[in-house]
Length: 139
Image (cartoon, rainbow, N blue to C red; front, side, top):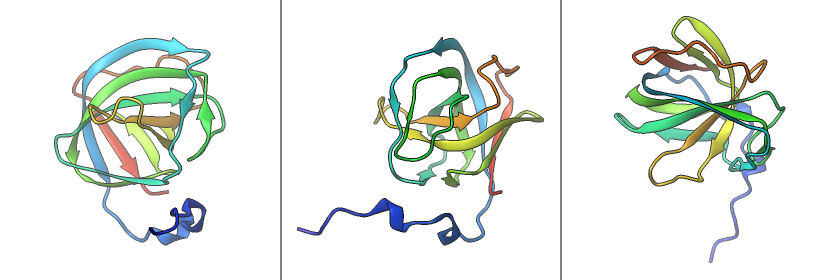
């Protein structure tokens, strides 16, 4: 059996040029938690396929792949319309406003959907509407 994969060996510089991943908001959520206990997976990147639906969450805590987040707000579900690779550190926008920086992923609800966790300036509920474009862009 092969030894476990060491995720710490994959530094941000490993990722070269890649296209912008885009999605469209399909449902709005209005819930926040002070003790959610999200455990972000260690992987820095995730491939997202066309038409997959994932949950978009924000946290005001400093976290990263392999970390945790208790203070979170679930803000929306989005459908992937331009698939590709999203990487922790990507800039995330919804509509014309910057939401924050991609912090990591929680797989609590897999295989139904992945929680995509974004580090935002606050847990204030962002103005998001069904149909808004979600964009993940390399820094």
